[in-house]
Length: 176
Image (cartoon, rainbow, N blue to C red; front, side):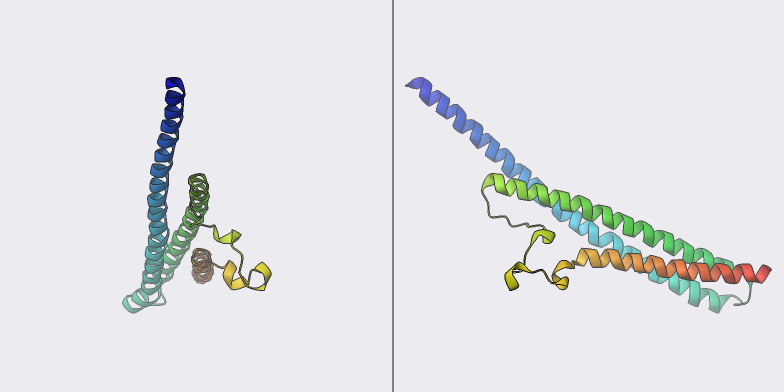
């Protein structure tokens, strides 16, 4: 009889320790997910603000302080715009990677919630179905703020690339 109690106690203790580890893992994963989400939004917002400053510097400050016909003016403007394109491209790539790893982390959180028997709070957006119209997913339900942020960063990159190409052509045409 004592052996049964010891065996059951040992099993219960292992289950308790496992549940505590899951709880700690869950708390750590949640905290890490929150920090990743903050980082996901902070970094691109700073890049977008810097991109605005680059445009102002390239087209307002340089034009007002230098002779707009000089090659130096055009060269500096071209450099600034290409720098803005590279910076926004890097930011878009960073945002894509942050989103990818965050989706993996959300899947791990879902797995922990399933093991703990909790109602799944974090359901990955792509798996959600609309309760109306027999689960049909509408286009606005597929869009997420994260995807729109990444798209806007890529749009800014394309805009800078076009401006850079235009300024480079103007600069080269001065010497031909």
